[in-house]
Length: 182
Image (cartoon, rainbow, N blue to C red; front, side, top):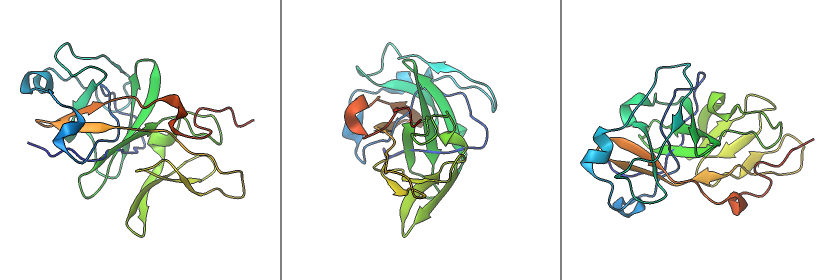
């Protein structure tokens, strides 16, 4: 059984997933997520787009996205959760992070295609548009490239029995997230 960890993962090609978000570091992040919920997770292959639907047996507010093994290390994947595009990232240490898919600087849905890395141990993703770098844990922009600082919204992620669940964070969680930069 995988431990719950913060989750976010960028990939060059979006992978259709249920729903994911940055996970809490404890099993309390998604109380009541059962093996039955994990067994009913659905996934799609690279390049496919899919929308996630809440599982009937998932805890209220959490959406089943995919199995942990469906997420490639140091790559991103895109998912549609309750009409919101999110990006999932799996880092080398096995942690999974979820952010909004929309780059707050360009307004383009591209963050899952960003470059995953780290800065002094802080997991990051660099937007493929203008190269701003975001902390996957907090959504803060670490390198604004000379522009006004904006953040990307991060979402809680939980892993239970190898299945990734995401809970959408309130829109007010990131200053400028989803804001039209033009």
